[in-house]
Length: 449
Image 1 (cartoon, rainbow, N blue to C red):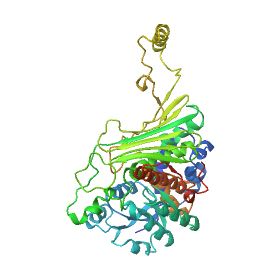
Image 2: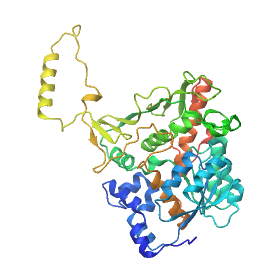
Image 3: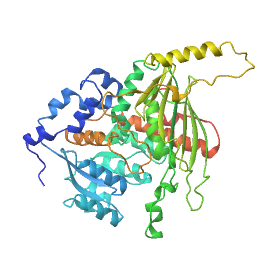
Image 4: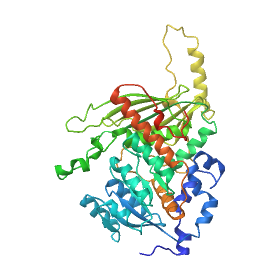
């Protein structure tokens, strides 16, 4: 396979998703504001793209783990002109066969060590069960490969620290699929928060609700723990590592610091008719040293509330997941609404305290404002595989570019480390029914408390 594409094709195709991404932010590519809010986007600046436009090489990519999420990445790779899928690897033959139909020219492997020993591979994508993320990442970095790994970083705190330390020793690129970091509405929303639009951030509230048993069809009991790895503690951190990891990263990104205390409760309350070990409902509070909290809730037996990432400010609320913000005192309220509010205030200001009370304004009465000036794509959180336009293609594209340039993305590994450790500590707080102080031995210089 040719590892080059024509300069003409490059000029026509290269980086359409990245350019559309920056345009969707409503800002000029390369402005200091965007990079200061999201420094990992520095490779997408106008200056960097000017350097990149003359490049004709393609990153030679291998996918390790060809299940549903791995195949999701394969579909995105088809849209990335500077990527070439040269190898596929899985221990489960049916998934490997499905993936090979998408890229029939790719070499097939059943042992990831053989992938890492292949000199004609620049970077690997790891989309395996969580329990194998850290071991494969460590081996891949040792083998000199660039790595793009699915979240979360690792299954244990010790593994997280081992991966982080190995990254510091290595010269290779390491990305984690924390796609909200590349989602335009999140980047723009965080920039608005930093600019003071919603006032002082006084708290954060995130939740993710589904109604599904999280079980995949298994053709043979022999493969139960391979196919349904999310249900067992030897391979999964449950809802916290699979869902909360995305949302907690957003919260620490906004706060610019880490919570110092974690407490929570969780249990298996609904899906109790099988041998699963992880909780189906979790409630965790993360408390910062200044008293602010992240309130996190997730369950998979009711989907009414869907998924939201709410940043609560003294002057408004930023709902990053839905792409809207709301102001406490909104000058855009229509004239008739302002009149009615004034009348209501005048009437009920004179009602005795013991009499009937006026119900205060609720979220339904707030006026939604778009975070982005252009199209906004919303993930309602019900897909267990992935959705379009959520930043996944952009972060994967940036990784493939980095496989060619060797340029590391600033803070991606650190953000993934912070989010994963908070998830794992949340699990520990629930399992022990205790309040946990963030352990000193797992703090890294990037963290502020």
